[in-house]
Amino acid sequence: MNKLIQKVFKRSLWILLFVVWLLFFLMFLFGIIFIIGVWYYENYM
Image (cartoon, rainbow, N blue to C red; front, side, top):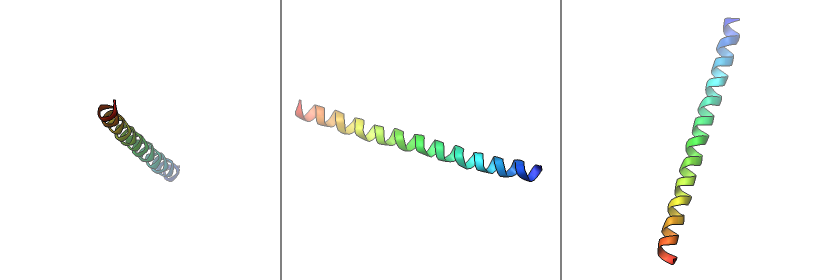
């Protein structure tokens, strides 16, 4: 029983890490797109 809990906990920890990494990656990507958009708007409008 204890081993099963550890296994599930480890798996959920990996899923949590992946979700956090994905969120950071999406925020980073959105930030780059936003900065490029603002720069483009400033230069060509």
